[in-house]
Image 1 (cartoon, one colour):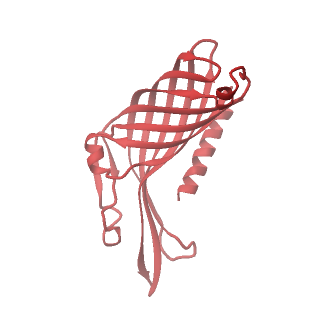
Image 2 (cartoon, rainbow, N blue to C red):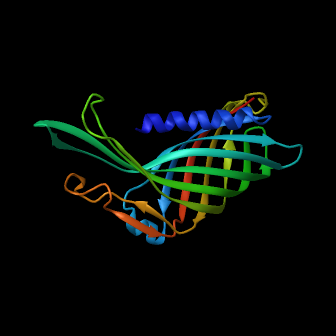
Image 3 (cartoon, rainbow, N blue to C red):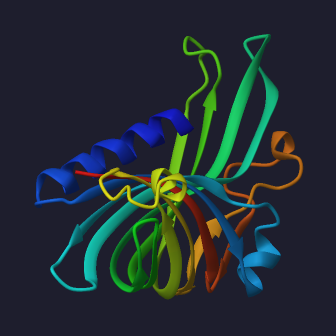
Length: 223
């Protein structure tokens, strides 16, 4: 399922890229620290990937967009269908869609330090499907709720080539380390019970504010 979701993110990002004059593209490894009631209900670390686009201006301000997917619950179990064991894979995940403005506060050949403001949405969903594609199991996909997000953060961009050669200002590869605190509106989401094999797909639903801190390790390519 995560492979399909990753492909969806790539296609969504390609549409974003094609619709604007871009300056850099990035892929990020993401982890999310849930807060308050969201943290009490989601007791696993959400993690996933995202793709971002950034358009620079002549000054210190840049604009961009990011789409991603993360999974915070994943379990497998066997059920009986027509006397045969069928392995079921069940996941709870969310999509993220954010636009952001970035302000570069300091830069040199080898680094850029920046602040960011973000706005967008987090959409929660669950899936349940058989591992074997020819199974008689009826796969399930359910969208629960969507939270509106706003947040602030920052980070540092590092150009590895310039660390070893201070005069190198032509490498187009950067490493991006950053974090954003995101305030999320109240919405419905699901956290699978401890024993999903004896529960239904409708169990484990919660509703609360959805604040989180998003951490990223990114790889950026200037175009």
